Length: 253
Length: 58
Image 1 (cartoon, chains in turn red, brown):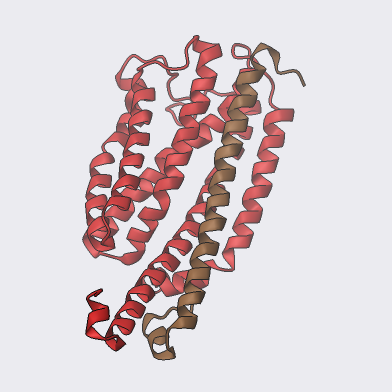
Image 2 (spheres, chains in turn green, red; image 1 turned 30 degrees about the vertical axis):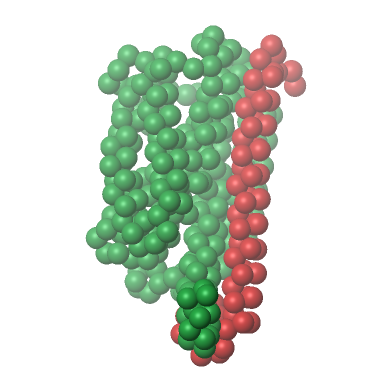
């Protein structure tokens, strides 16, 4: 069943009716999350109103890491099974993951200035997130450098898997090193340390961002499949025209 | 609602996020339209036998 669903042609067919629904639900969840964030969440006793930045910073950080994890899984699919959809998924995820990582870095920086007194410190968590952003940029640049998609897929799959070492470093950086960044407060032993009045809107925003990210990713995958069809048709069309052309025209004379 | 002395930072963070997400959506729509147009043009240009070989009708 999985093989049938993952066939690029079938993938286009079964995702087509899903797209408007996913987009609609993502938009509704985001609107509801923003309402909660701006109108129901109380100011933090230490951070004051600045805590509202957390409702975009944390979901963006989660998606930056989530998309890289998805790319690492896809990289295994590319290297082991050489499945074309795995490569498509990986290629579609990179710009979206990079965008959310950038949002995380910029919003974190805008929170840091009033709270820590500085936009940036070379703290383990901040630095590992910056490294994640640079890896994303490297992967996107490499894709544009190698023209043959099959060669590009293998090279990028290897680079992605090497870069995946950074994911546990991001997660545990606040435990392994003495950092300015606060320790884990949602997923930790003994439950969340956040008050429910702030935790539930935060979880709602994480859900909304995740669904938005998945919608964008599925759409990017569908477009990438189209791009590959355009490429293959262009090559066929060029070959067909070459077959019927005089020898001088083929050699560009 | 008053955002206090750090309103610029809060609004700046939300504005930046909105800008990046809008950019992602705009790029997704634009790219999809461009690929659909290119595929339609190629399908129209190529003979029916070539079209069926690539499965480009989906």
